[in-house]
Image (cartoon, rainbow, N blue to C red):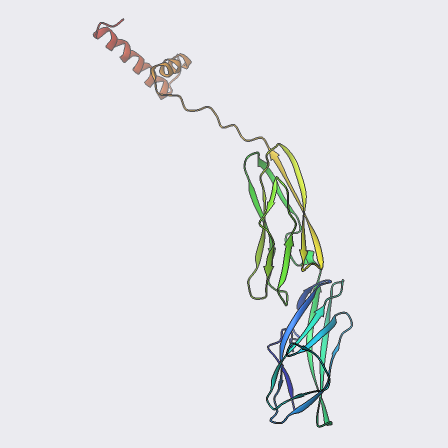
Length: 270
């Protein structure tokens, strides 16, 4: 006789560890299936673990009560909560399921799970943001990358920043969603160094601090406005040209001034 675990993250994947954040817990949902054409009694469900803690085992959303009967080919939901230790570790967690037929012919099925607990700072990147020199009145944006490789959905709560820093708010990242980003923006209003800490709390169970820094600098000079195209400006340009100037603008200005004087004599204007 055989009991199987299906649609369950971590099952029998001894070549790949499934990641949790240190100190945080995840709810794992699976299917427990009786693959036999006769009913069996489930006498015991036992997790063997040194560092990870398994609790809150549910069968069809009800607290586990042993023994219980699985009818032929019956499938039930099998949920449990697993909590990572406060240190980084990889561990093989085994699940043993003891079944009998009317209390006889005991058989134990064993399933292997590999779990890894990660410190948050080893999970996201970068671990600090330096905006460098930004002109006052301008702005720049940098991003913190959050991958989707944890074994369950996780909420990343972002602390509220104050000017000149701003963030784009909290995010939730689930397996298979693809990597997401937390955006941080720096818009200096005064000259000088600005620093602040961005605090990210994961599932309200673990927090990390991302130092932020940026330097407000004086805006570059915008230069003078282009001269207006009128007689006064042209006269000014001529006076600004030295006798040795061969600049086309100066030559054009001289020609224009000469033409103005000639026309004035022609029409009797002094």
